[in-house]
Image (cartoon, rainbow, N blue to C red):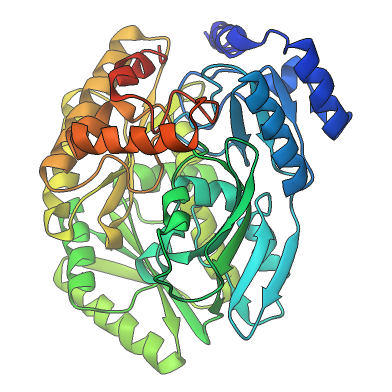
Length: 487
């Protein structure tokens, strides 16, 4: 079965892997030299992300060193009407990097320099290929850190492009809140800067906000200006087990409604805790569980922790385990961040089909319980994790993509869960983005007029439709076709 799956993936990945136009390839090689490859392994790697979604390989992969090189590459691609797909670390989950119409992939991993750190202003400029861990290592001795933590060691350009968030968003916000400015190469090859290094501005359209979350469909992000934060004086983390999932979700909701300043509050159901114990060799109690973290002064951390603990106990929480030493906290959050891979390890050889629902806090408990019941009713293995302080949670469906009946059940259940979230005033994606995997859900969420506005913006900035085509900003009439790319 595994050999057959690998063959099927390789066949689908190589669908577009014909050669580039000779004139275009020669021009691109004049820009980047031997940093252009058409080798099969590189094309396969750059056509598939971490999800079950079927990949599509580009015809060539280029590794630019600078904004100037990206500008020249995109200008040449535009002249040849060749599609361009930006690539960060390949950790996306909705098919964002699949080259649906072939063309070239721009791997920005060589653009990995921290350009400046402004300690007094608490901000920095980085190239798009810098990863979040690399940045925080660079900041280690400055007293500052960058908090947005999606789990994977993603590139900051990719995180901006997908409007990523993660476990710390409940306190520090998402990439939407922490990107101050961008350098971007537009679809005609023009390089421009959006925004300034200030905390607020009313000077014109907010182009930075437009491009954060645009997933490479409006241009190539090459540099990012980010807001930084002071490293907290004190940090404490805790794990609390609950008798049932309802109690755990209600505790998280009440903690937020009480205004207790938590830095992280994460939910795992019993199945996910068991998967993490097996995968990370931890010994957590196999029950619905909340992970907490608190930042601030020692007194503030103690006060917040005690208040959260009281609420948790009132909701049936018990067996509090505290982690105050840095090594203990790292182990705890490393185990939490392994959740996706731990879930996949429950069925070796199968793929992950994660949902990314986000609802108002007042509707969180009912939506979580209804989603879990849907998976049970349709006999689908689906551990649950959630950034529940934001109302965001993931059902991690683990599926055999070669089993047509199971795939059909999974797609039906995911559609039902998305409908539940949207009917509750929520969204189909809180942080993973759209790619081509969630295009099918956008009309129900936004309505056709809003999608036509998005399409008009795409057409105005990218009239040749070369930037990551077939995804965000496409004509709504083509969304159904995009959904058929998957098996």
